[in-house]
View 1 (cartoon, rainbow, N blue to C red):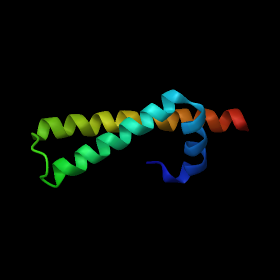
View 2 (view 1 turned 90 degrees about the horizontal axis):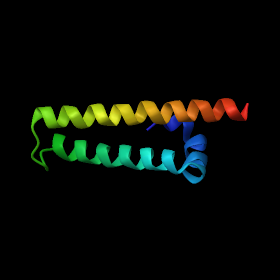
View 3 (view 1 turned 120 degrees about the vertical axis):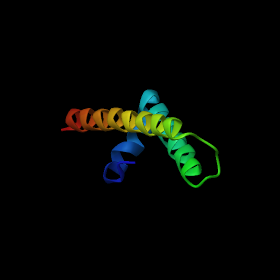
View 4 (view 1 turned 90 degrees about the vertical axis):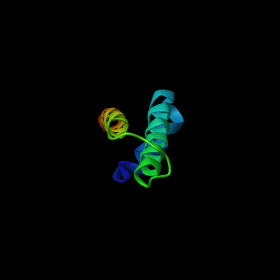
Amino acid sequence: MLHEYRDEIHELKQKDAHFAHIFEKHNELDKKIAHAEQGDVPMTDMELETLKKEKLLLKDEAYKIIMDYRKSKA
């Protein structure tokens, strides 16, 4: 997720518990989605879509935190 901000992500994961939680939850959802898409975990299309939307919301929130952090360092 957001690999181009690797340095900021590393710093934020150590400094911001909320960001660390968002990042961890995003990665958990990513794994769940991958297992469902591979057929390892049975899931309806609606359930899968809900997980994808939740993952996207987390990514958007993480991106906003990263951008705010970059502005604060400038």
